[in-house]
Length: 221
Image (cartoon, rainbow, N blue to C red):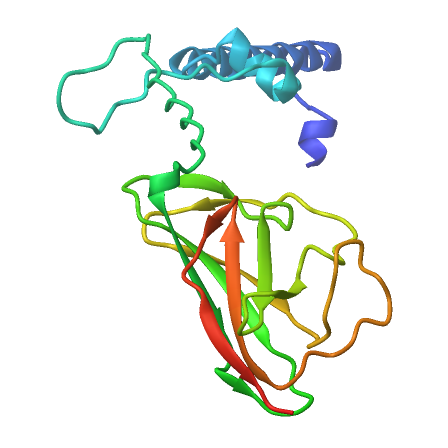
């Protein structure tokens, strides 16, 4: 180590230092040349790759074509939309001959204090759906005594009428019901009407002035 820091020999000390400096410079040049040679052998990054490393958000990826896995004739860039389904036609009102009426009661005989209940049913006997108005404005129930005199009507005390239009599928029924308080009634609905006497009564049911087959009920006193 002393000979490196303090060279000895026949030459002057400055001569030895100059030789050593030249040797160091040559060594540095060799190292730099070797580094340049190695770098030339390595693949160079593209400007886009360099930009992506500096700021990834500035570079948008480029998408290549997507391979189709479907078989058959390849499709072009344009497509034809399927036609939208046509709007369903409006359902027409039921014709008179397309409806069947039926009148029923919840019992054939009623004991004292039991309230009779009557039901008028409308059935579509046609081949297509249709609409029927069966609100209180177009239906009525009437009770008559054995002599044929009117005893009670659902229209006498009906304060208001309502429209109720229903769609009836072929073979389907729609029912309309009412209850009879066993009191007599008259047009205009006067108060203090007497109760109906015990006996047999005929019940009539109509829809748009079309009568159903009547039925008979018995009231016990």
